Length: 420
Image 1 (cartoon, rainbow, N blue to C red):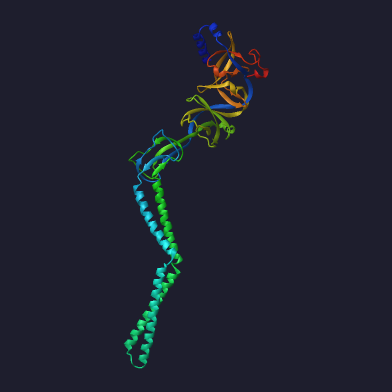
Image 2: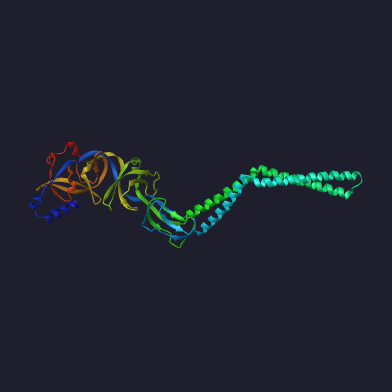
């Protein structure tokens, strides 16, 4: 292996084999690699994506007067992203509120009914009209009596009867006005006034909302990744302001081959390695999209990973290990034997040398796991090989070791474990 050549160079630089033999030995605990039935796996390239991505738009048109959000800023939920000029809407709101107040006062007047002072005036007018009617009734009787004695001319009779009829109509009109005052406004008139108030209240509410929308706020906590508007720019209704992403958790998208589709299920655990961070993350499959890409014949699979520490960024490349087939015999080592360094999994293999036992860090590719064991799919660890399960964190290069337990490197592995 190329890496072993590097270790030989390291040993030469350190000096003679005698000097290497004199190095203090690190105490370790080892176990042997075994052949176990584990599902087939495949290492696939994946892309880190934010769990939420949104292009914030303006619900109203207007001139940008303030743009505090800049690319890279972390915006808290309800934080101000942009402010539009709201002077025109503020003037419209003041006018609409004044009109609403007038309509509400009119409705209250109708609902209250006629005031006592108005009823008194109407009653007085009615009494006056009745008195006039009585007066002209008597006058008609007097004139008719004179006419019967030939003491009145026809014109006098006609004029008296005309005044009587006029007095009678004035009395009927006064009676109707008084009755209307007593009964109050009709229900239909009150309902019409009530609808007018409701209509104007809706106008006020709409303008209030439009005015509030001139301050554009973040709907969730996230980072600004693109800025679409600048101060002094006119923004149309629906115009883009910023693009915001939420990285509190991420969805890692993997394009799985179609032969893996029967073995990939929502809720299954998945491991992902991100070379840029030199770290391995564990997540769970959240979505298995049942529509293949017709060109590549791959199915999109999304793995959700908690990202509270913000280490994962949108667009990062990751390597996902997914189950792609039924169980088969594979070389497996205890999970404690696998140490991730610089984004690469390593196993410290114990080998006998002229100077004694030496633990050699070996880069491996891992596959499926079951219980406390994990498959090694790179083919560079054979069944029965002794690997360090405790103390491997202190081994960064070929290191002389000794066992702290009872297991001996000379003890051959069980026959069932020596079969590849």
